[in-house]
Image (cartoon, helix red, strand yellow):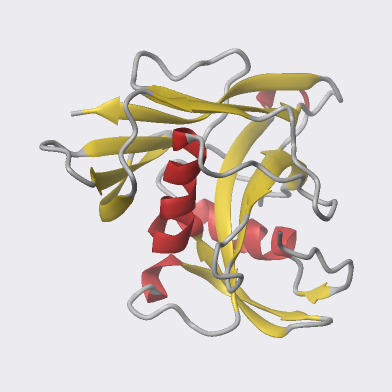
Length: 216
């Protein structure tokens, strides 16, 4: 399991996201600059132990107008070739040095592990505690294949679609990552889903779909 280093990052992930969020098609903020606050999420392990994988929920705003976004991120010790468009930014890690932080929906390692989570071959890990499974994360997928390869990424008004090719499947599968989270939302009909919790601006806990598997 990945080791979580409790150390400094300059700039912080939230500072990078404050700059990056307004550039996204699904960002619903108003005229004020974003001020994202960590609201929940979980981690996944890279089987090779090279790439950090985190699904972070961040809440922006206060009161009834607050919006919670889901930002899957990967952390790498070197640039990911061909993924310049997906770079959120770089940060100096107190232990690991320079880290390249990517929108994980464009990172094949995250996509493969998301599929493994849905298929029951990976377990969601606690966001801030070493070697600890997060029991609040639920995942399921009907008739999973052995693995899946990312074909393309498509942004929507409140989601990002990851079109993947499952081993042995005749038609593609779309992993729809919810970018704007909704309390109680299950993502609609599909072959499977990942559901998890996050904290609302008022301090209460919400639960809904983080990702849904949609057959084409």
